[in-house]
Length: 370
Ligand SMILES: Cc1ncc(COP(=O)(O)O)c(C=O)c1O
Image (tube, rainbow, N blue to C red; front, top):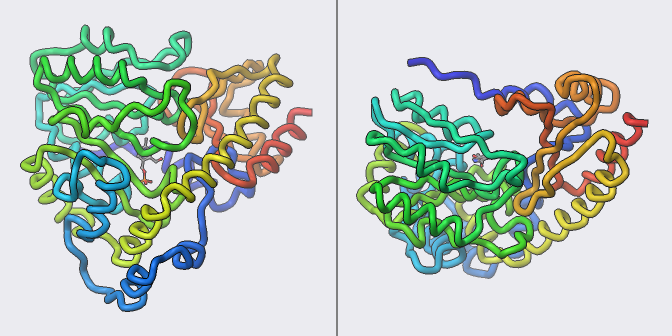
């Protein structure tokens, strides 16, 4: 079975390294490698200086797995963590392992394409449940309940959500987990944007901490702003499943990059500082976006994002959003992402506000509008 083109990656590969103002990025501002190395404690510095560039352990550097558990999933331990070359490798390996022909997967849309594409590749059928703007893009557990079929095997969620920036509350997650447990379903919870932003009700716990059949997907790319490391992980209480997923990883990346593992370890040890810097950038940028939305109410509207660093804006102009985005990038070098990239039939676009140069990109957008 052939796989469909990943529209978002195709779009970014066309513009990401040529458009000077990326106003749709989904990651926080990066750090330089030297800045991270300078944060290292003497033992990590020694690890870095003496690092051999050989293969690493397929499951991930043991001290890194320990640190991931300690920093992000305190009720779990290293044996519950499996590392990958980015979150994408984790999505591929996990969903390819869980899905079998004839299974049903429930996926919330719009969604990051690989979350629905990989089960399809294995011959699973997908039931899409649309997140609705009139419902503030929030999960509707009642709709999911109605969609469950005898062959449903897994529910896939992604909160904070790409592209809307909406979050899941603890109550909504608990209700979803009760539903999954009642039907013995896997819950694949893509949490790559977790800890970036300020949800009104605080952060829901990672799903893997509270449900034995949940997989929590995490990564260095988004909240930490270190996509170039290509280090991601899955946290899961079910070690039998983790083993099977590891067998799949033997066919994709085999193991992580050795330097990236050590840098990720240093980053996680300095998690509070790094997240607070990134959250500050996001908070300041959101204030500018609030003012922008207020000023241009005739043209734009949105449900203000609560988590992550992307939001889904409705364009109320007369032309199609694809034309608008194309003209904007050609004339002003500012990149937005139209809804069609998510197969979403609307005049929305994704805006990103995790980067330091977002104010300059927004100024260029304002110039374009005037
Ligand atoms: C929801 C979601 N999951 C997974 C990924 C993949 O992350 P990575 O690039 O770190 O592999 C992305 C990247 O945009 C994403 O938005």
